[in-house]
Amino acid sequence: MANQSTATQPHAAENDNGAGVERPHATLAARLMGAALRNLGDPAIEIVLWNGERICTSSHPPVARVRFADRTTLRRLAANPELEFGEAYSDGRLGVEGDLTALMEEVNRAGHAAARRNPATRSIAQWLRRTPVNTLARSRDNVHHHYDIGNDFYSLWLGETMAYTCAYYPTPAATLDEAQVAKMHHVSRKLRLRPGETVVEAGCGWGSFALHMARHYGVKVRAFNISREQVAYARERAGQAGLDGQVEYIEDDYRNCASGAARNYDVFVSVGMLEHVGVANYRELGRVIDRCLKPTGRGLVHSIGRNRPAPLNPWIAKRIFPGAYPPSLKEMMDIFEGTDLSVLDVENIRLHYAQTLRGWRANFEQATDRIAKMFDERFVRMWRLYLAGSEAAFTTGDLQLFQVLFAPGASNHIPWTRDDIYRSSGDSADAGPSGFL
Image (cartoon, rainbow, N blue to C red; front, side):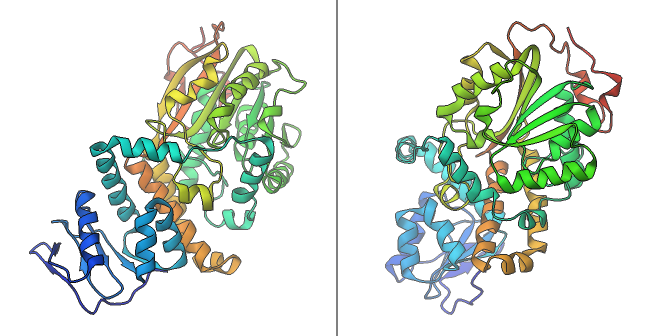
C-alpha cells in the first residue's frame, strides 16, 4: 500500500490555488527530480523524497503525491523508469497518495510530449524492446501466466458475465454487466448471425460470448482456447445452461481452428485474443481464417491496438501479460492482405474500454481483502497499478480498441448499410438480418 508517512522537511510553498511552487532544494537528488519534472513538461505531480523534501514544478495543484522510500528506489527508477515504477510500487518502496489513474494520465501525457520533442528516443526504445515471436509453446506459457491464476480471483471483479474484454456502453449510465451483454449483442449484430449458422471463435475466455451467441442467435459455436482453467469453467457453464449441444469448447490453439474443417464455417470471430498472437503470426492467422470461412462467410476481430507501432510497457510484459502486443491498425491489416479477405468496417471504441476498466477497478477495490488472502499485498498493488495504468492508457490515447469486420473478397453477401448494427441491444436475430446485398 502507499506509504502514508508525513514529510518533516517540506521544501515547496503553495500558491493561492494550492499548487506546489518549486523552491531551491538542498540535495542533489531533489535538484535532479526538479529537472526531470521540468523536462517532462511540469506535470501536476508532487515528489516527496525519503528525507522529506518535496518537489513540484507545476503551477497546477498536484493530482497525486509520489513518495520514495529510499535513494536506491530513485536511482533504479531513473535508470529504467518504465520497468522500475511498477516494480517499486508493487514492492511498496514507492507510495502514491491521491488518484492513481490521474497520476498515470499525467505521466502518459508528459511522456507523449517528451517523445514529440525527441522522436529518436522513442524509436530507439522501441527497437530495444522488440516483442518475441509467440510459438505454440510460448503462447501456452504466456496464457498460463495470466489466465490460469484462479477463476475465483477473476470472478471477484469481472462481473457476472466473466467477460475479460472491452464492454460496450449504450449509455454512460449502463452498468458493467449491462455493457458486457450490450457488447456481445453489438458484435453479434455486426456479424449478422442467423439461426442454424456455424461459428468458430478463437480465444473464448470463460465462454460467455459463445453461450450468448448460441442462446440469443441460435447458432452453433466451436470455441478454441489454450487456457485449461478457462475451458473447464466454460464447459461447466454450458452444461448448466443446457447449451452444451450447441457450444463446444476445445482446449487448443487458434492455429488449429481450421483443422479438418476447410471452409465449413459461416462466421469467424475473435474477441480479445489478437493481443496474444504477435505480428509475426498475423499472416498465418489470416490463412487460418481464410480456410475456416465459407465463400459467403464473414468475420470480426476485436483487439486492443495503438495509433502507431510500439511495444508493450516492459513492466506489464514482465509481470502481467508476457508475450502481449497491441498492434497498430496498419499492422492488423497484415491479417487480411495476405489473403483475399476484405475489410468492411472498422470501429474504435477506446473510451468504452476506459469505462470498462473503471468498473473492473471498482469491483477489484471492494475485494482487495479477499484478494490479499488469496495471494498477498504485493499482488494487490501490482494488479491495482495494472488496472489504473490501463485505464489511463485508454483515456490518454496510448491504447485503442479496434473492431474490424471482414468477409471473403468475392462475397456479395455483405451489408448495404449499418442500420441493423444499431438496433437496440435487446433485439433478437430471430427476425433475420437485414441489409444484405
